[in-house]
Length: 303
Image (tube, rainbow, N blue to C red; front, side):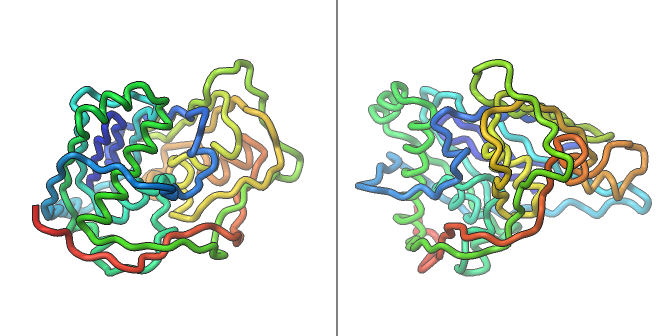
């Protein structure tokens, strides 16, 4: 499976290589930290032109007998990079992932999109979308902060979904399954950040395990990292530690897929690593979370 997005300079790629290098910059304005749904408050901007084509993923052949299970990992480039001069956007993905992007939900938050037809989340039958930002709009965006640029593109994606897919939604607070991040018995094992730099989370993974390095990160930002929301199986992660400030820490663990395929790594599972190395716990719970309710969506109009 491969989802590839180039959104006016923000390049996100979900792929499954054995080697992984992830760098995630936490912006100061930080919708990443708040994980709030982006609501349009006025007229939304639109792309100058967009083409949409059906795209079918070709499943990989099954592994030979005795071969290790494939390792699924995620690769996310810095989100504070500015848009390229071309203002181009290219995506191959299920529409549910485009909806999470358009409403600025964290990667892996498809569980917060409720309703809609089966093809919305279809993994095999996806869509290839190419879009261009109008030149004057692209030039104006160059003067914006990275967070403002990203929000502007998200609103364009909302317009695209409404114009070409007929998307209509409403929003509700629902009590849904989450993981609550709490302090473990014995107290947290966290070091206050030594610098005032913008928060950064990076992860390096290979056939033996994964290692996350965090610098100047709040625990709320940590809970919204796609590295954590992905491991939580689509459940939102909610910070309930009451620990304030920014922290530096390193976390080493063995992904679940590796743990079942090999016994060569000494690193614990992610949930165990969070408890043993950070003094924190991920506890299954329920909490009120804002969700997106699909009222209407249809197959895209012709190009």
